[in-house]
Length: 193
Image (tube, rainbow, N blue to C red; front, side, top):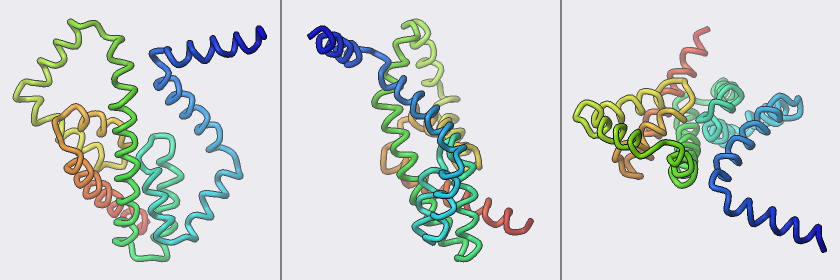
């Protein structure tokens, strides 16, 4: 009986724990980082390249994170060796839209809310006032778009775009165009080497 009661108390504490989503995000990243080094995982990545445009789509889905960008870039480049680079970039760009949207929803709906309690109200007020100035109002989306278009992982750009007042459909269209163009540039540059 005591074990069941202890388990029930532990579950209740977890449900009420303020930082559970942040903890799960960090734990998932650590687990993925460990699993990504396993040879069997590398074999799975190489099998996706045989799927053609679907493989490019899956590569694009994982192209958005700092922890998955390297294997997904290799996957996308492998697919582009045998298929049209423009179509590969479009397929991968569609994958990045889904990956970016999932990151945005997870960050906005859970992690941002949890982490905001770490900052006192004076700090938050100062930051909000700073971002509300005309200089930052137009700079934040531009910086976010630049990060998304670059070969850098998209998390920082998504955070910046999430702070701006961009609508969801604008976010999705922007990430598709920017990521597709960025992936195409990477494919073309890698092909010339």
